[in-house]
Length: 419
Image 1 (tube, rainbow, N blue to C red):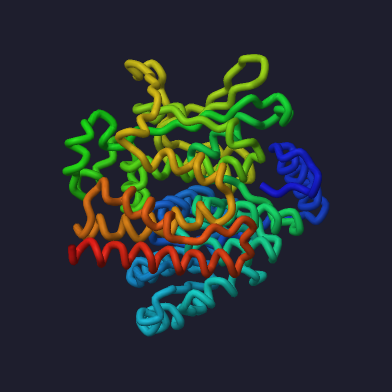
Image 2 (cartoon, helix red, strand yellow):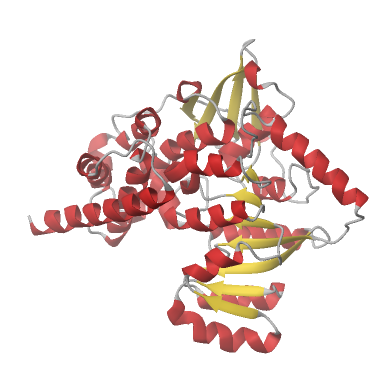
């Protein structure tokens, strides 16, 4: 969300801006579909975004598709959607992309710089940032500079540099709509509510595949165990983050920057059924919740529609079919990564940037079989102890800190493998 300097940081700023944008569009008689760039089009969220776009061809048109290295998937997507641009980050895959798509009149490019530069192009209105990890930060900042509408699925952008991003938003007409199911739920619950009426935000967590496992059993968990999520179909990195509950730590950080609340106003609760996507408690004791099937296409459509609810034939939630809805307190003893969310907010500065970088390195090592499941937290904690604290980082500081934290985490892994 974007707020003017000095404004209360609640959903009203986005709502009023969208109303004015709707008026402007009506006055200009704009009826063409909203042009969308999908950053991370071949990943789980990217694929589901294209499904939503295909479901509403009169409302949305994919004009830019961007993938990391899955060039064959990108080529197939481009053949179907016929965007203006198709970009691959892995430059070694560019010849195949160019050969396949340029005869179709689709412009092609490669490399991270091309991704960053396209964010300021005039060929799209909204970007869905569906990448995972630190790589989403630079293009999101470029999109903000260009005044683009942003459907944010890349939580690490606000985890790593939430203060910087919100300051940039204050200087731009850009608007951020949350795509994470938990933050979309909170966003929906806050509509029509005064910021001062909010007591706390309650983020729900599925508990992941190890919710009922003992600590001893968790210590022996394999990548195959951790990738077996009971409710959600997600990419490997975010599925592991769900298993460690690091994703919930990140969502706590993201919520602080999205909704402008104090860290003490954000709590998490384990909800194994993944039906209640999150809740808001108000000062009068009332609690509003957003419920739905565990289907990411719902929050994607809500963000693309800029809060407009779009009719769909997809299966809806049937409470009559639910045997029960249960809630539990998170267990930071078995899932120590969870505690890093509030720690990062309380410490501030570059702390979350370090945590995110070390986590990305550690999760990759776990997936390769080079690190135990409990070792993920160990690498993060040891990296935090070695990186100097920067209280007010600039963008260059974040870039340097990210690189240093990755190098330190990698060295820790190398040392442990030689021990």
